[in-house]
Structure formats: structure tokens, C-alpha cells
Image 1: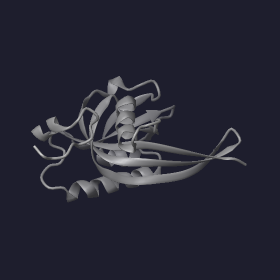
Image 2: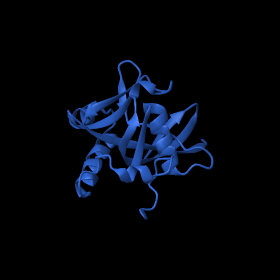
Image 3: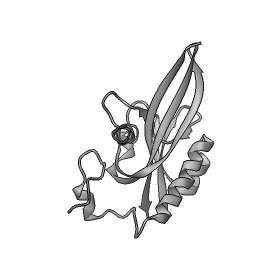
Image 4: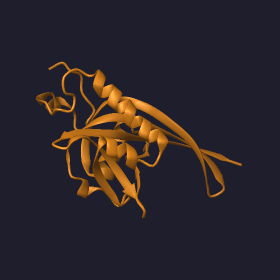
Length: 165
């Protein structure tokens, strides 16, 4: 049996709203299966750029990466082939955009209060990523989700540039 290896990247995007801390999820199918946005890394793309692109495409929202959260690997079978997929997840902060602008690959993109997001997520590994993301936010100084003028110093990809300004 042949084995195909796949690499994907995605993100856990948080924002602060009047309702509290929220996480951005994508939904597919009926009944809805809620997951974190993620997808294949294209040729000549870094993991970070792929994660930001997939978040933007699947959710309609722009984000900024804080840090890498984790890598999740799993096996599945498709068309007679065994696949090993590795997904690299990043902790991100929402910058702008509207979930109504998600692409055709998903049926819905929506913001969930963080506890509701953990309940809605289908996969245990992704529920754990929410916990990891909250732990990372707790380590950061100040309010990491507050939009600051420093955001203007990032490049168009959403990856932070060196803090030399």
C-alpha cells in the first residue's frame, strides 16, 4: 500500500468583543462540523504564509500570527491510499474582515465565545488547541488582542516584521 504525506497549516484566531473572548471557526456539511481553518501548503509557501492565507480564504478575515501552537498529525485512508497528514497550527489575532466573505470550500465561518467554540469543535485535538491558545495569551504582557499602532508595521502577509521601529 502506498503512503501519501500531506502538510497543511492553519490558525486559531482570537478576538475580544463585547461578548468576551471569541474564536473563529469554519463549518461544513449538515449537520455542521466545526473545525479550525486550515489547508494545504502551496509550493514555495512558508507554513506561516499558508496558515494566514488559509484563514483569510476560509473565513474572510485577516489575522496576525503571535506564535506557533502545535502540530497535529493523523492518518486516514482515501481512494485506496494511506495518508499521513501533518497540520501546523498558529495562534493568531483578528485584524479585519467579515466572515460572510469566506470562500466556497466552507459552508459557514463564524465567531464563537471561547467556551462555546470548545464545545462546537468536532475534534479533541482542536479543542486542546483552544486550551493551548488561552495558555499562550495568559503569558503575554498587556492585552495582546488589542489592536495597536504597531500592527501598522507589519508586512501585508500578516507576519510580524522585526520590532525595530
